[in-house]
Amino acid sequence: MKIAIITDDEKNISQHFGPAIYYAVLTIENGQIVQREMREKLSHKHVANELHEHTGESDQRHGFDSASQSLHGQMSQAITDCEALICGGMGAGAYESMKERGIRPVITDIEDIDTAALDYASGILANHVEKLH
View 1: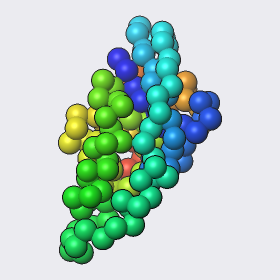
View 2: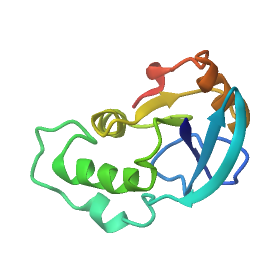
View 3: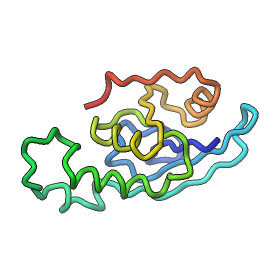
């Protein structure tokens, strides 16, 4: 199984999905990490102008408008081969976008990438959806 984890330093899980700059992609087999790679992640910094444009969809909740959904789709392109995305926090729009793309988003309070990945693979990683914003 492949799991993507957002990070800025290759060791710790970033606290928010949008601004994070990397995905640590771990392959887990038989309860062990057998491969790891770093992939660049499109972040809010890369698309600052797009984020500040108004789409005219003022009745939409933040992160659910078409521009945001398109951005989330672009952000997910680098991890389409992963079954899950682990992060310390994210917006509800991004969370739902990942689910729609077949990637299970998981919000964790664990900071260490390896610990969170192995807990996910073991089925014991809690999903703290109360941290969605």
